Length: 458
Image 1 (cartoon, one colour):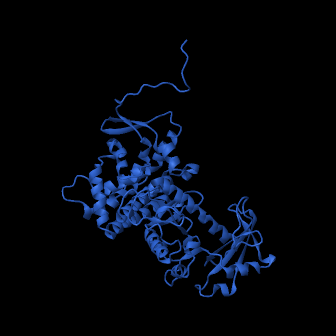
Image 2 (cartoon, rainbow, N blue to C red; image 1 turned 180 degrees about the horizontal axis):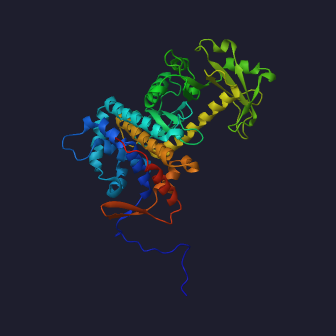
Image 3 (cartoon, helix red, strand yellow; image 1 turned 135 degrees about the horizontal axis):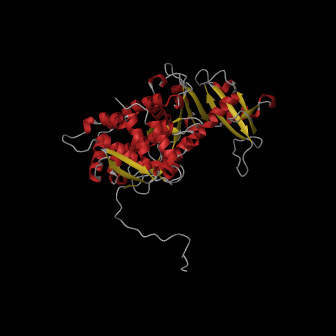
């Protein structure tokens, strides 16, 4: 009897397979694009950049790039994975054609960016309407988180510079709409900046906040129903005053730097004034307390501002900072939300940490590096990354349920998009047969069944 060699079977490989589709699970993204009309919206927005007698539509090419990035690509050439599967993705432009389009759109500057952003805003409104109770505004409020991202440059790129973490690259500032505990989140703004851009630059925060608000449905572009959250980088007089400006009246929850004046006030807070912090389930947070500061600390800030401070025992191994007191880690934030317990406001601000999850997802979806040289081209790449992240947020919102809706991009790719299939054409119909033995085939088919009843665009 012949003994096997090694733990795995020996498989003979041939390159003559037919009708086999790799990344067959990506039909979830394709069907999402079709149902929400994303391709049509971007195609209409980029009509002026389509040359006469052109074979490939600029909008289709841009969405193809976003699909490639959503499936794990990190450069323009990765669109080849779509070109290899015309039965699923249709005709896909060649690399030189795609490169020329990026150069043309980048040369148009803000005109092309404005057109793409307007199309995204239009589609976003429709997606939220289709999502109904699963939409991020189902509770009557929209939460936008602002945060910076460091992107390392491995070659000389325009505007690349040393960063505050002693790396070299760029420092984009981004905005994300939080979907809450039942979902993930979607990007609504990305402002490309040099690596040495300041973390607390008020003008940049205002720019990103404007871009983010323009992506929301009109009823959320001003008023208390829209909450802007950010860390202490946004805790400047200029930015807070802009958020609270008459006619804008946005809600905000902004981290504040622990200054010497705040530190002195914290030391004077009596023990009876501290309230136990709470967790998301309503239980008391062990070793954490909150209190509200008042007095001359609020001088010079907009009317209605509240300053809330938290003290907490640092986790094992954490080193105390000079601003900490009595062995407690001290943090502070400002808000203009009234008539709510300070413990609930502190919990709401602490949930801003979900933005770190969105940044991790962005790094795994085309933001690990900026693949192009010119700043204008890389800003366009950021728009492509945002469209990819939009799709990775909208598809679960419309088609997935339970824990599967919480899956981040890497898990979606591994479990759903990487499923293989066989493409069969019969009776003028194109049928994609997924591998029956794949562990998550049922999740794919059930998700497609939820997308099917949605109305077709137009």
